[in-house]
Image (tube, rainbow, N blue to C red; front, side, top):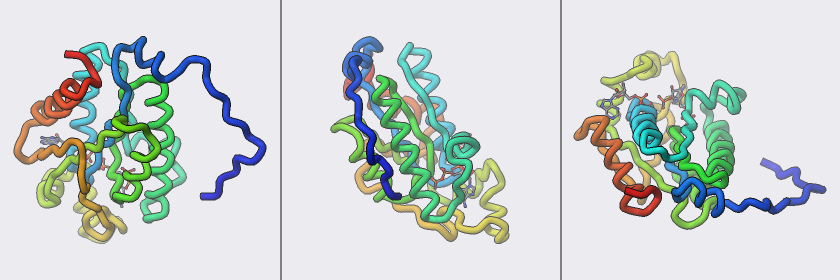
Length: 202
Ligand SMILES: Nc1ncnc2c1ncn2[C@@H]1O[C@H](COP(=O)(O)OS(=O)(=O)O)[C@@H](OP(=O)(O)O)[C@H]1O
Ligand SMILES: Nc1ncnc2c1ncn2[C@@H]1O[C@H](COP(=O)(O)OP(=O)(O)O)[C@@H](O)[C@H]1O
């Protein structure tokens, strides 16, 4: 994408990210969920968000399907469109972190290079890659939206894991195996990580 920032000047804010975070009594971060369709990204991200909300943390959740209805409604599923999808989400996620929130994003985000790009936009420790690791056979059995069935029938093209690439995360901060744990256990694994690493207090 070409930058069109000529004649624009960056304004430093009077209220800093640190001050916003202090007021909320938390360390802002971007919980970046990645995994195949049907792996459990939305389910686990929602469960974590609910626990955090009940604990009075300040959070927001950006979910793939929802964001594709609005902000990214012009994008499809070619590699190029997925890259642009993730670029926009990274920018929005960065703004939410800047506002002092614990922000979660639940997108397939299939390419390691794009997840690295999102990581590089944030400060050290702000980006938490959460690999929702579910074998494709199980995702296909779950098939909550009937999409695998359609992809196998050739009714959807470029479907992740079938005829479009998914790069397995190289070194995620959190590795969640949903086939071995309940939804609640998966969510607690993530909440525990946040507590142990000082993002939220006990
Ligand atoms: N071709 C193809 N491949 C994968 N997924 C597809 C496709 N077409 C539609 N869908 C639906 O779109 C959701 C994935 O959108 P994302 O924005 O997360 O995808 S990506 O990060 O840009 O790859 C995905 O949602 P999840 O099942 O929640 O992952 C699907 O519901
Ligand atoms: N341990 C688990 N973690 C997450 N989801 C699970 C788990 N066990 C079963 N599921 C089910 O798997 C499906 C995952 O769907 P969803 O969260 O929409 O996945 P994604 O957002 O990755 O496409 C849901 O129907 C959910 O109830």
